[in-house]
Length: 210
Ligand SMILES: C[S@@+](CC[C@H](N)C(=O)[O-])C[C@H]1O[C@@H](n2cnc3c(N)ncnc32)[C@H](O)[C@@H]1O
Image 1: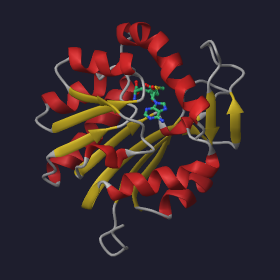
Image 2 (image 1 turned 45 degrees about the vertical axis):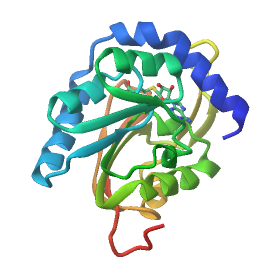
Image 3 (image 1 turned 90 degrees about the horizontal axis):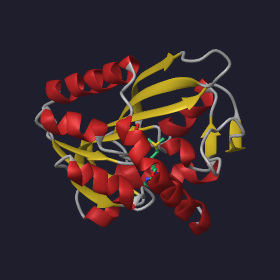
């Protein structure tokens, strides 16, 4: 992603951080977190990297549930809110997860990778794969269901944000280039709006571990 788009995101989300922090959480997001947590507990996973963490709402949930969490975001205001909740948090661009110098049992990425231009998603997925342990699990939640890339004209943020949306079969093809798909489900939200794609992935121990 070019530097300008990225610094735009940090500025936009700095501006909306306080407002986002006051919001409640939708029931379907609670179910998403619970499902992933149950899998992590079953598989005895201990460490979790959160990317595009936002206010730390979910990082706190996983932290309070006994995982060792590092929450990261490109917006310093979001990172400040994560720290305020007692989380270990760093300003980090998800294009460069190696920055932390650690590998993790799991990654949680809710509604952040939808800000990546399509030609750059493979590079980001490859970088995330590289910081996962061999059988590491990766939750990726994004909006999609149709083909779209660009500024979302219905966005209620100012300035309007950049999004990439994929049809279900296409997003599966893209992630399957880097991970094994353990789970894929769609959740219908508002009529006429993109639906949600809930994806749980695993780093496949048989592939090159670059
Ligand atoms: C729609 S919000 C979602 C936040 C949180 N995951 C949630 O579900 O509430 C997207 C988040 O991704 C972050 N973000 C956007 N581009 C990023 C990048 N290149 N690296 C890290 N974080 C990024 C934004 O700052 C923002 O906090």
